[in-house]
Length: 409
Ligand code: PLP
Image (cartoon, rainbow, N blue to C red; front, side, top):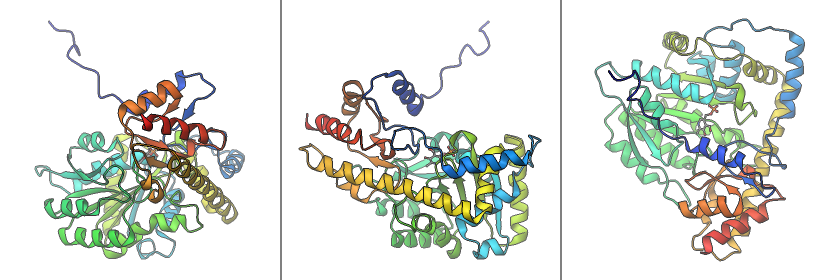
């Protein structure tokens, strides 16, 4: 008799975990970590927002303890999270048409959102198809397949291109059966850094309405889009536009990057509905889905964000800090672009000038990436996507030299 589980094989490898292991194992002083999508400071380290430090003191003084929170999370947090994305004066907010629940980070929002759609947008017997623009965040495909979706892909962006491949999404939307789900990133696209323009989003919205497609938005980097004061409004513009145009939309909101709360798993899921009574029922479905999956999301990080968003001064302080982070990334990208351009290379870097957010999608082959890690101690994922925040004034010259040298071969 075969032993139980004897036929079980190892699961799919996780490129990001493997990269982290390789990075941690390298003890060289010259190591440059351009891997995980984490905002790093000028010392190349994890960066704790000062405003979060202040909120921790306030929270500690409140002595709230650790009793269970409601299944749907800290309700003041979810409502402030919705206002942050859609604006206090948004009609959907005022008319109570948004069903919002707290989730285990942005990934949890994707998971609960996918499970909710599979049960409530498609019937049990119907095939449900989700469309992904590739290259995409690596977790989408397994996450949606796990929720019972069939995954189809189109090209979000060609390597080396200076903009997203608009014609490809338009074609995919025309060819997809009506009422298909499209996973879209609101801004600062992971991994390419290339987003659709406002005009393109307008056109995409019209086509989605016509075909009754569902917009499944992932918003993990709102505010990192440019170093300017309007970055947050700019990055979330498409969400408000789709909402106003009546495209069926849900939004997965992550606070991991925007508040530096990665390990606290702070997120929210917002489903925009056409009326308050519909939103009430949807909210109840999200409650049940959350209860079945995780019972409730962790309170600590959500309480910190709630404290910040409840206080005007702290909110302003947070916005300033977010703004400086985005400005630093902007500066790094421009400097790297300038340095790489001044070197002879077999590929071009023009795409960097249109990229936004934490990432730059370099045209590097797997063997060039291997050489960067083995010979130059520069660590990046196998798809050539670098975390621009991992560059510092101290290491950017060396990083550029290394990238230049492997692309000259
Ligand atoms: N969506 C995208 C596009 C991401 O890049 C990430 C994290 O890297 C997430 C979602 C998940 O964020 P969280 O850590 O909050 O689960």
